[in-house]
Structures are given as C-alpha cells and as structure tokens.
Length: 453
Image 1: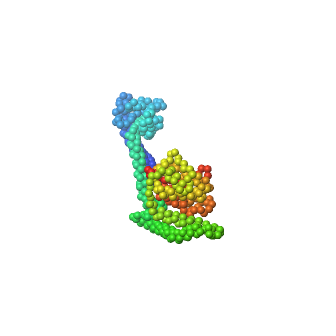
Image 2 (image 1 turned 60 degrees about the horizontal axis):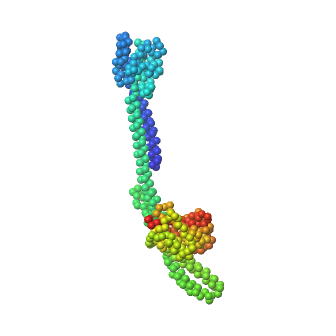
Image 3 (image 1 turned 135 degrees about the vertical axis):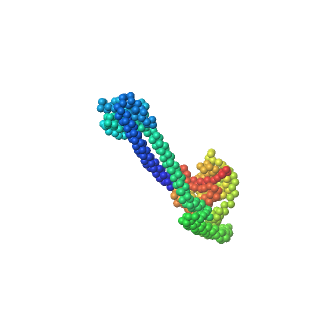
C-alpha cells in the first residue's frame, strides 16, 4: 500500500508537473510575443515618422539609437532591400547586426511581409524576433527581444514544480505507510496473538476495537482462542488424570510382578518366558506413565528450573557413564564454549533420552560433540549415531508424542523420549532438531544457552 500510494503520487506529480510547465511556458511565451509585437509596431511607427522627413543617414542612425529599447536586445533597420541579396544601410543597436538575425525574418521583410520567430544566438540565449515592413518607404524593420526573464521564470517554476512533486510523493508515501499501518495494525495484533497461542501462551486475547467490523473479528478470534484453550486444557487434564490414575494399579502390578520374578526359579520354562514378557511390558508401561506425567507438568508450565553454570564436558561425561556409555567419545570444537547455563536434571534427561534413542533406533551412539552455535550466547550439544537416519519429511514430526520414524525397526521405548527432549530444551531457552550425519546416520542437536545468556 505504501508503494502504491508513493507510485501513484509520483506518476501524478510527474504528469501534473509536465502539463503545468507546458501550459505556463506557452502562456508566458504567448504573452511575451504579444508584448514584443506591440512594442515593435510602436517603434516601427516612430521610425516611419522619421522616414517621412526624408532624413540623411546620420539622422536615421540616430533615430534608431534613440528608440526606447533599453530593455530589449537590438533593433535593425533594413533599407533599400532591392540593392543586394542581403540588406544594406543597416542601423543597429549595441553592436548587433542583421547577420545575427534568422534568415526567415530577414527574407520576410525583404519580400515586404512581416512575422515573428523564436531563435537563439551564438551564446545560446533565447530571443523573439519581430519583423515589419514599412512599405511606404520600401524599408524593413526587425527588432529582437531577449527571453532571459521568461526563461528565468520558467526555471524557477520548473524547480518549484519538481520540488512540489517530490514533496507530494513523500507526503503520499508517508500517508500510505501510516494508513497501511493503521489498517493492518489489527491484523498484526491478530497475528501476534495467534503466534503467542502457537508458542504456548494460551491466554493471549485481542482487545476490543472501536471499529464494528474489526471488533467482530476480535470477538470471533477470542471465541476461537477460548475454544482452543479449553480443548487443549481438557486434553492435558485428561492425560494428567489418566496418568495419575494409572500410577496406583501399575505400582501394584509392579510389586506383584517383582514377587513373581523372585520366585521364577520355581516356575516352569514356558511360565518364565511369559513372566519375562509381562515384566518387560509392565516396566515399559511404567516408564510411559512417568513420561506422560512429566510431559503434563511441562505443558502445564511447571518448569521448576534451577539453572546454573556448568562445564558441559564434565556433566556430559558423568551422564554418559551413568547411562552405561562411559567409553563414548566426547569431542569439543576448539571455538565452542565449555560452560553453559542449564538445569542439571533437565540436561541429564535430555542427554539420557538422546543416548537411549540412538541405542533403540540408530544402532547405538557414535559420539557426543559440543560445537559453537551460529546464534549468539548459545552452544550446541549433538549426539550422533550410525543408523539409517531420519527422512527429511519426518524431522519435524519425530519430536511429537508417540511419533516414530519410518526407519524404526521395533517398538522399543515409550515413543515419548524425543518429545521430552524438545520440551526440556524449550524450557531451558533452546531448541532441538535432527539432521544428517556426514557419512550416514543422524545427528540430534540441542541448542543450549551459555552462561552469559
């Protein structure tokens, strides 16, 4: 809209400037030519009176010099035009001669006619010449009038018109910008509120608008946001309630299974095999419920952060050993910062889940790397594996609940590990993503804030 207003004002200003200048120029020139013709006729009448007295050459020359033409360029009297192709006995003012006049004017008076013409001298100055024939004395009279003042006026007018067009363009551009901002401001507020809701701020709402149509839009948006918030909160409550309700029977089942597992030597082989399946599934079910409860707390905003400045290399080494990956190499880029501002418990959860995911679906972790981040005041923690990798179309969905890549070979795990990684990374002020590892496999990367964040 800003560009449209500016372009329209510019085109309109150019057109108006051009047409106004042409109109003013033609009008000024017409006025100047009319005034020049009247003045030339008056002077020709004075010379005609002098010629009636049959003066000698000196008296005629003095009469030409005495003409009231101080404000004009020059006057030329052409006498005896039949004696030669060019006139003789020329009387002029200020050093000008008939040779400075255009041939058209000279020819007109030699033929007993009259006329006027715009022309320029050798210095580029503009003139208007008026030619008259004094037929009673067989004499032609030509007078030229300078157009300096007219050209000066036209230059001033052109400058004023150009400045006016530029100012009009700037004003129209500013008007378009301010108008577009005023018109689009409600849409910007809608976009901001929608972005806040998308980022998790479910309580974001729009204020009432003075415009009825915009107020209707704000009301509809708020009603939609209320419905979305109610549904999400209902689903969160349902998940949390179900998880809490499942804790008691799972705890009882786990205790019973442990009792049976302790007596497994007294059971037949087939019963032991069935018991192993039940034990593994009960433990998996218990892990899933715990993960769901943790996700419910994170989504409810119960971040409960305890950030502190830690040495990422030492902490990553301790976590790796705790999860049974003590021999896993930890590589640190020479430009990467070793210290970061993290919550130890959340960092352990992030790294432990990534190591478990690499074991379950990537053939095992190959290395842990700590690298510099392109974003200031942050560092990258990456876990690499040698598995089949993650397809590009699945890289965003893989961090959702119960999402599994198409390359997953089994149903090991709860399907919530990467979702927890993403939630914990966001709670720390970072983010998580997956990319290809050079040479094959996947790199799960988490951006963490540094101690100066």
